[in-house]
Image 1: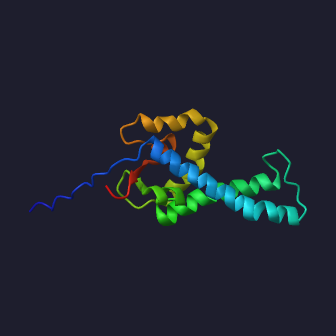
Image 2: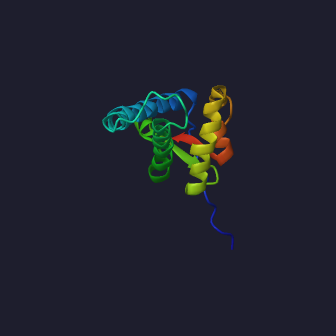
Image 3: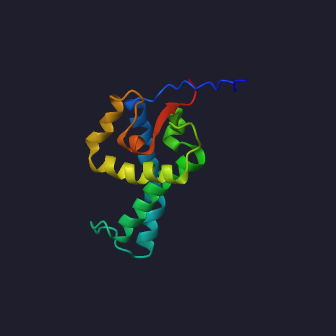
Length: 147
């Protein structure tokens, strides 16, 4: 007897502009959290927020919020608030649940690399599965939730 054939899901990959607008909305959310919580708390505690160093307490705190937002939202929901609004979701190309290591690699290391060399985000527009560099590293992509 042959095992039943497993259908492979057909996805509609999210293109550059959809991902761009979702990311922009995510940046607005993060900036709002920083503006409503982080900066007022630092001012109330009289901690210097104008220090341009990446090792300044405010820089470290905002970086933790930035990366924490993307890691935790992607792990627990498969999408950030920006992706939710635009109906997008991060999936594994290996058709399995996103693991902590995959998400950490995608959202932390991959996003750091893509963010360091901004032109790398444009790669999304040219690859068949609309993957960014961070997606290529983690074997993930972003798809439309409802095709």
